[in-house]
Each structure stands twice: as C-alpha cells, then as structure tokens.
Image 1 (cartoon, rainbow, N blue to C red):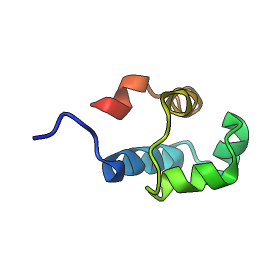
Image 2 (cartoon, one colour):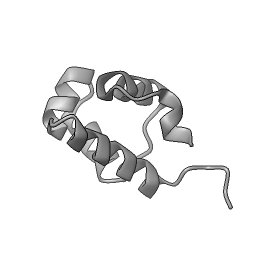
Image 3 (cartoon, rainbow, N blue to C red):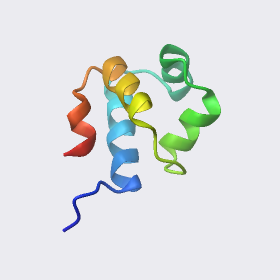
Image 4 (cartoon, rainbow, N blue to C red):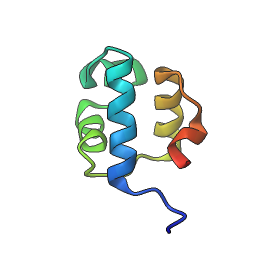
Length: 70
C-alpha cells in the first residue's frame, strides 16, 4: 500500500466533486482563476496540481484540503 495518492485517484476525486457542485470544468477554472488548459490537464489526469491549486479547488468545491490526501 502506497502513502501517495495516484493521479487517477486524485482525478476521480476532483471530477466527482465537480459533478456534486453542478458546475463544469470551464466554470471551475474561471472561479479558481486557473487556466482552462491547466484545469483540463488536472481533470484528465495529465498533471498533478500544486498544493496552491488543490487549496483553490478545496475552497471552491467546499471540501477539506485533506480530502485530496486521504
């Protein structure tokens, strides 16, 4: 068992919470001031978001930052 979260798991957690908030990726990018391209890379699992981006996502999606590391 790894202590690190996989890109796939992180992608799934972000996508599930976007859906719960009833917004789309473009809206999330706009709200968080993250470029559409970067947000799409994160949602598609092509890149790991920085801690600052995870903080913005947690605030916008109304989930604790720790959720991304459980």
